[in-house]
Amino acid sequence: MMDFAIHLEASDPARNIRRSYSIAAGQDLFGDWIVALNYGRIGAKGHTKTVQVADEAAAYSYVRKCLCKRKSAPKRIGIDYKVKGIVGAWDDIQWDMEDLAVA
Image (cartoon, rainbow, N blue to C red):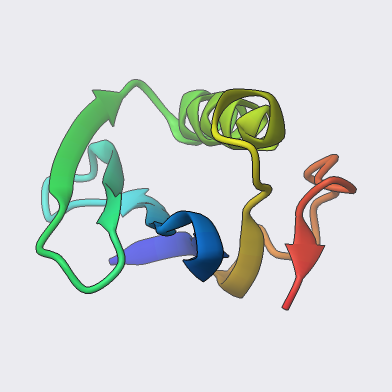
């Protein structure tokens, strides 16, 4: 069961940039906290990375770290990520994502 999920996209058709990035965090059947990342080109299968963390605070910290990396996208790939969807119990928390515009 995922307690939090966010989906980001960076798209610039003129420069052939079409990237998707999703983060989901929650507890598995055994009560362990899991953070799942899915990223890649929009429309492609992409890559999946799953990380087990100690508790909800560690999951929150890991998600924040990942989102901070996405905030640096304009420097790295030349375009910023847009928030396409956010759901879950953490959506009321301030993520310091002023640079990530909501689409």
